[in-house]
Amino acid sequence: MKVLVINAGSSSIKYQLIDMANEKLLAKGLVERIGGEGSQLTHKVNGVATEIKQPMKDHSEGLRLVLNALIDEKIGVIKSLSEISAIGHRILHGGGKYSHATLINEEVIKDLKSYIPLGPLHMPANIQGIEACMKVMPGTKNVGVFDTAFHATMPDYAYMYAVPYSWYKDYGIRKYGFHGTSHEYIAKETAKVMGQDISKLKIISCHLGNGASVAAVKNGKCIDTSMGFTPLEGLVMGTRSGDIDPAVLEFVMDKTGMNVHEMLNALNKKSGLLGLSELSNDMRDVLKAEKEGNDKARLAVDKFVYSVKKYIGAYAAAMGGVDAISFSAGTGENRDDIRERIMEGLDFLGVDFDKQKNKDFIRGENFKISKDNSKVAVYIIPTDEEMSIARQTKEIIETK
Ligand code: AMP
Image 1 (cartoon, protein in one colour):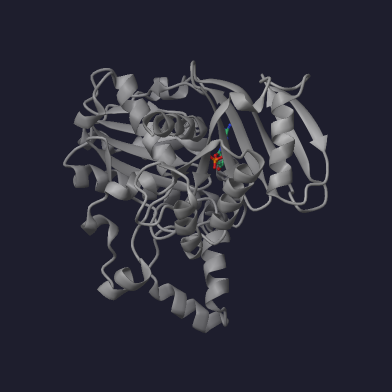
Image 2 (cartoon, rainbow, N blue to C red):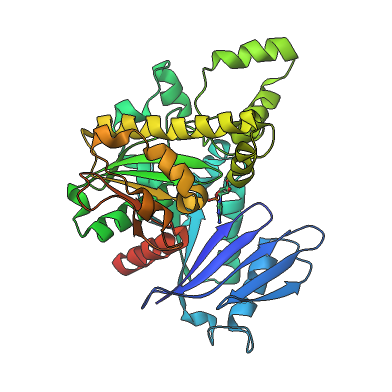
């Protein structure tokens, strides 16, 4: 079975074609600037890229170009589109309703449209991606895999905010959590490398990229996560503030004359590492500046590290212990200095961190960075959201 994984953005389509018989990546690529100047497809097979520059007025045209590349005599990897058994779509939001991957039909699309206010940047693009596939590949099954789904098992006292109850009832105000596809993959891989049954483990999954979140996974189910109603809550991120006292908003709006839209823009795009360092949202730049003696960069990194450490402590308490802590995404997978700073002082939890192994990690591989006798195992688990989407798509197709 071959599964096409689609991640549609407002002017882009990322894709991967995966052969599920051996979980081999056959081709991957990106369509950019759909509907604008300079639109192009970059199609990669075995690391060799081909660029096709061509105007594309909408997602359907972009997808047609992708499909043509997949069956092309020279750069293609399949003979006919009929070899694609199903299409798995990355979808930002499943509301409070979708707790699992779902076969997409008209009713699901109607629900997704009703979630646009919950994810105004991503949802319209995700829906366009699905509609383009239905138009260009009629008859091929589409499966929706939701970034919120893995968090649907949180208990009410974790996902509710202590605000007037009617806000939840009338407007759906609650914690949804994001990066769910990644946290699910990380937790399952962690159990796999430990050689243990996930239903008996307490795992803290740390997805530390430009967007960052932590999830508490107890017995295979997410019981809490740091992102909230939107991806703004929780950890300090590249440009997002993470947790903040909402009273700050009114205070600063009064002082500066900012409106609420400008304020949220500042919290989403001008805060986090960028806001504190006044330099960059990229951890590499901020760490370099810190080394050169820049104290605002030092503060930004310390604040980031502290926010991750606090959530690890909180989630160990929430789960009544922890068996494994796993690091993933850009910073989590690549920065041994950040991992070491986060782990410092966590020995009280039963972590016996191996600084040398942490430095000697092999990029791109699942890797243990705690000592063998450590009560809490610590791992680097490179996340693979596309593979997770493909596996869930296969599962849905096989059971329907
Ligand atoms: P992501 O959103 O997962 O792509 O992660 C982006 C963050 O990861 C940025 O802050 C980068 O500094 C960091 N990052 C990504 N790749 C690397 C790398 N190869 N080495 C060091 N840091 C990296």
